[in-house]
Length: 364
Ligand SMILES: *Cc1c(COP(=O)(O)O)cnc(C)c1O
Image 1 (cartoon, protein in one colour):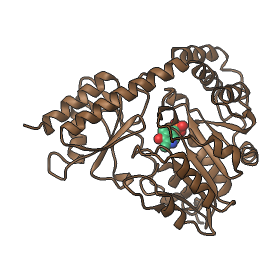
Image 2 (cartoon, rainbow, N blue to C red):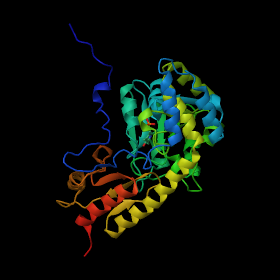
Image 3 (tube, rainbow, N blue to C red):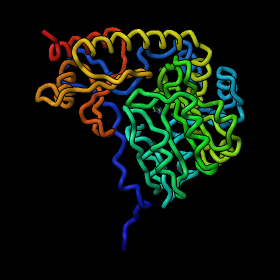
Image 4 (cartoon, rainbow, N blue to C red):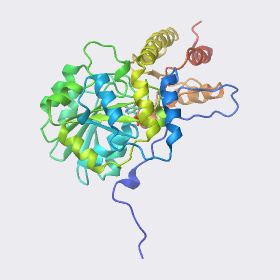
């Protein structure tokens, strides 16, 4: 008798490897491998979470009404178009499950966020990768890949791990050249860190077109990664589809409560944003001073290139930093073997990183 076997594509998935969080031996550990919030979380969000913990015996509000209202109010959006999920990851998975299947394909850029590919494979769809220019998504290359089996184009803006972004005009150009029946998913996980005037997270395009979705998260600047909370801003028909296929209670009550309080604490968000801006400038300046190439970043992380020399290449520096108590992220899954991605951490963590790197790259 044959054994149960999963649908095609599933066994082609290499499980997503999260940023490592342990380094045996090091006395103090700095985790700069998962783009988590440098300043932790809002005290108000934590208090709301703890208060919600008094009622863990009750099912959450399946429609996440208060949270959706608060998101709408904070960002100037329509609550009915918002669908919340267990991380934006769940929204990305649900979109793929709803719109792509066997024989279909999704398009993403060459060094784009890998969750899109994993979502496609889990639905039996293919992932097609468009070449980038200067480690930045190239709209024309993405459009060249569109065929009659293309269901979704995923664009992380700004992108993780490269830290580069496309201005609103370019994203609009992508939408305008896409067939109406292809969904454009703009993943704006780092939108709150963005200060460039030509940037937009994508809500205007969602309001204007029936085939554009924007996804957002509480995992980054809001510092609630452990709670798993994200949302999508959708055309009404897409919101309707997601609401049909999501679990009826897909977002926990403590997560909803913490989310509302976190949105109410924009002062925390502003502190995190300024911290990130200052420390990012400083780190980039230090990398430059050591002769290390880096990609100027718009997120809370920086992609740094290492020379192809024993003892100083990306692999060796990854281990060396780990021994010193600083965990950063390897980049070969993104076809960026010479690079490491470092999350911008606390002042102390960033100083430690620089101190360790200077021992290998000081210019004398
Ligand atoms: C971190 C990140 C997310 C957020 O994932 P969650 O599931 O919301 O924690 C989404 N997209 C990109 C590009 C990211 O880097």
